[in-house]
Image (tube, rainbow, N blue to C red; front, side, top):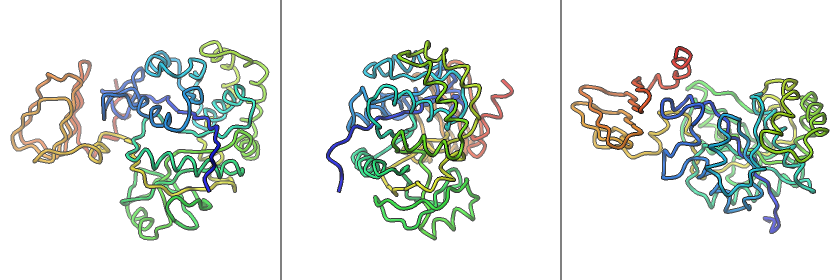
Length: 356
């Protein structure tokens, strides 16, 4: 039975270094601020998606100082006090603890909080909302709930979650969180039909996440308790500045390592609503249609001779890009830079940026 009442808060994680889609994305304008798939930015799509379930006042966005002005401008309907500027990057355990603290400060109740990425695609919005409703029900019971994506292929780019049973939309105890596997292991996971992709979507009550943080990484809760003494009604950069000294005390650790892989309170709901984390240029092959030569062409005039299986993108609509005898390449042209790489090496962009 799905609850009729809900007062869920949404915490959207919108940091990002802008590396995976460079040169389209940068630190100032990372992936979530790009309009890759429609005339809206990805973070705008994310907010519009959850506005089907909550009010704008219930949506919080966690970002950094470099990106905060663009985020505020892009999300004009979100109260500015709901834009949480992290003073430093200390990974997702600190970000979730801090964001949840601010949400708790602004509310009189022990609200259910849903943590979402700002730059994922979801094809079936109604299915997504129904999953949130089901997850909220379990979260109210005191569980930490995650949405596990039903695997459609042996994917080596995602973490996995092992379940007791895999029945769509039915909560199951999460047995283990698994790191990104090699291809052979990923194939085994797919055959066993008890593994789902880790979406990074988490749903919990504030009291539940604090209890589990205190159990497995108590220093984070100690830092949070110290912050409570100074945050009062501060917002924006003022809040960021007053909490900066406390952030230095956070251990840099992900929420998966800190809590999810250890907690006995994890429930996973297997879902299939057209999720894609758009983790790099190769993931565009799952989203965009290809031409007769298997090329993906986005926002560019592309003329080729004997060229196939390429991804060709520009941020200048009038730009002409040509190729002869080129295959399996990523070609990205912007006013500031040009990237040319083999598709199979596109995950090495971070390596390239260290030299720039």
